[in-house]
Image 1: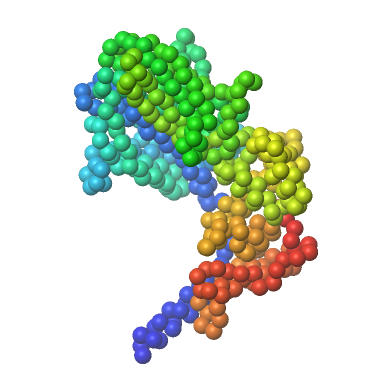
Image 2: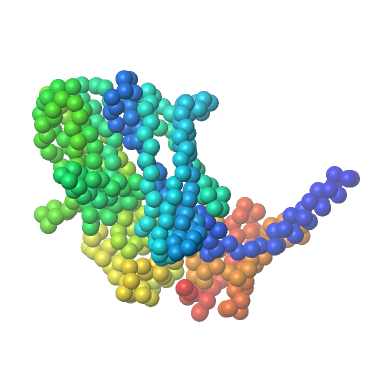
Length: 432
């Protein structure tokens, strides 16, 4: 009997807690830790016997760390830790920790999405598989982020071998030498900039080699191929190359993930070495959340008319579809003289939130809660009742400024909440 009483009390407590819901959408945490950091691991040959040099880059956006105003400047500080374990994750082999400090005089710089701080540390490891953990901790807020990765350190001691590919964000000449600003995020605006890359080829003896570049889509189909001849001296040869569209060729690269492959054939053409690099194709002005054009177009159902949707979808080719899609959003831009299209970003931010929070049997953006959230934005209050003893789980969303509330009931008990009263008329209109 006592067990039943305790259980009943526990359920009542859960019900009470669940009804006190605070809406977190749109609120930024103290240190703006809603933005991840980027990292990249790269194999290069080293002069240390039987070991490969592994360069580890950690790129931290300014929006990830917390700036504090000190005198006439804004300062931020964070620590970085890179830990290398054996393949079984049982033994710590090597660890490096360091601190980074960032300062700027302008507040706008602290919240700019294009600003970041980049750090690099090198490790010398015997070829094999490793478990590598990276982490950062903000000095002011003590908030932290981490990433865990299985990584293969390659043997680069063969007659011919190739390093990993470092994507290049910017290339400049300093006193006759190339200075590379790496692209660690792997986000590439292919139409505008193409793909610039850096890698090294290692040869035991001088020879003429053939280097083939390919860009492959997610299905592994080559959408671009280029071949160059290169004389390799013995030792290390550094190569910088750019794949870029011009008026004489058409490269069918849209949004999303692609693979850059580089293959080096030796002088006999019988032996070759190869390496891949995944990159993300982006377009200027398009939210980073979007990685599939066709899906992004289908997601317009809450903001576009059937005629507007058909006009975009019926374009004769992919380039025309892209043009019409961007024209649609340009017409809705509340600040057309700025780079950022606020309504464009907000719409897909809502879709991403719906997918993260309301997905069950279908993607969250297609669910009833997702539909209401995308159309009307974040509710002023949400009253959740997942454990009421005399009713099925339900939620009430309150929109005080619209003088509306919407009830969702989970008829199945598996999180499939359905809107009890369909949206109609003025309610079914996107609000920014």
